[in-house]
Image (cartoon, rainbow, N blue to C red; front, side, top):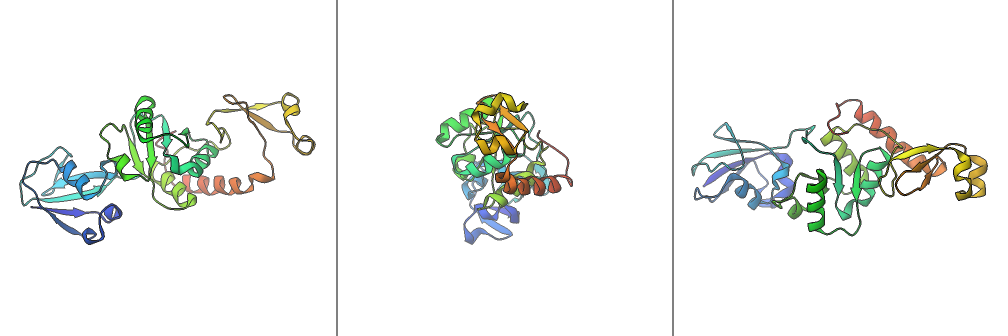
Length: 241
């Protein structure tokens, strides 16, 4: 038997009957702590410090039966060594768009399967953001994080709080994640509607897909997102970006 002291921040991953400070689990001394914790439903990318009888250990530890194990959440802001950016699961398209608006390198495809996501995260050294707990439990996953919140506003706030990202708004294409570059109006005039040509003079173009951008009336909601993120960012230090 092991006694697990599970941090409140991790309770969402376990069944309601185990959402308490002390959780007793059967244990024969053979399994690693990582296996025990994931068997409860907690993905290891969500686990921070582990202590057995108040001594720091890692997930490979095999404690003696009867030990008390403290399971803490990942510390915030989280530092992911070597990370180049993010990769988002198919269900987080709106979040992907908002991260790109903030200038954060965000890969996303609305038809990528789990195997493709794990492979891409490893090949490109991206942190996989998902709400699929099973995906976070894959051994081959390079780095990942569970996104908290049902609404895009809450999801964005959670990611920004967890990773303390450096922001560079309006520098990435919301469609393909390519980098934007300022472009003279006369070079894109033939792609604009008459009203746009008449009312706006400042334009940018995606260097990857050639999509043209300008700061129009449709940007008001995005302006509010950028403003809120910038204010929140001022209270933390950048970790990625």
